[in-house]
Image (cartoon, rainbow, N blue to C red):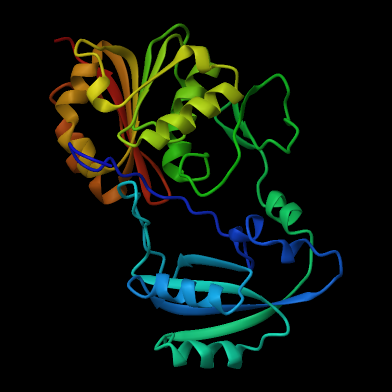
Length: 328
C-alpha cells in the first residue's frame, strides 16, 4: 500500500488446529482415497529465516507448509507485494509418513537451517476440506446481521444474511475489530443513508451496511486488490450496483456521507482525522476500529475537535470509538 500512510489492518490469519490451511491448495497427493497417516513437523524460527525453511521443506517433499505466530504477536497488513510474518514464526510442514523427523531435520541442517525448537505429531487421514469447513460456522453480529459461509445454511433465513467465506484475507468477521464495526452497523439506523467504508478490504462492512438498508455506499482502499475483492463479494451478495469503489486519489473532492466506518489502525486514523472529519457531514455518524485499547486515548484526542464521542467500546484487546459529527 502507498501514501499517505499504510492503512494497515490487523491481519486475521486463520489457523486450523493441528493442520494447516494450505491443505486446501496443495498438490494432489492429499486427494488419494486410501486411509493413511501423515507426519506434521513444527519448527520454531525467526521472521528472517521463515521463507528459507518453507522453501527447503517444500523441496524435501512437504505436501503443505503453513506459517503461524510463535509468540502471540499482533501482525498488521503491509503494502502489496510483501508478506506479513511474526518475529517468532512457527513453520509447520505436512509429509507422507514415509518421511521421518530425523531425516528432515538432518537435511535442513545440511542446508544451514537450524530450528530453535521442533516437535512433530502423527495426523490420521480425514476429509481435510470438510474438517476445515467445520471450523467455521455462521456468526451473528448484533440482533439482525449474520455472516454465513457459502457451505452453511442460514440459521435464520429471515435475518440479514451476508455470504462470505473465511480465508487468509482480513475482513470476514472473525477478528474483534471487524466484529465491533459489524455490531455497530447492526445497531445504527442506516435506512437510505450514504455510507463510506474507509479502508474497505474485503468490503464486508460496506456490504453489511447495504444489506442493512443503507443507500449509496462507497468503499475506498489503497490496495487495488481490495477493491476487486470488495466488488466480487458485493456481487455475491447482490449489492454490487449500489457499491462504488475508489482508490484514495479518485475520491471526489466534495464527497460527504451520513455514515463513516474506518477499520484500519490507530496511527493512520490519527493522521487522517481531518480528512475523515471532512468526509462526514454535520450530524453524521462515525465508527473507528483497528485500535488497541492502549491507543484509544490518542485516537479520541485526534477526533474530539470534530465529533461528540461516545464511551469507548472494547472487545478483547481491541476497541471501537464512535460518535456524531458536530455542526461545522
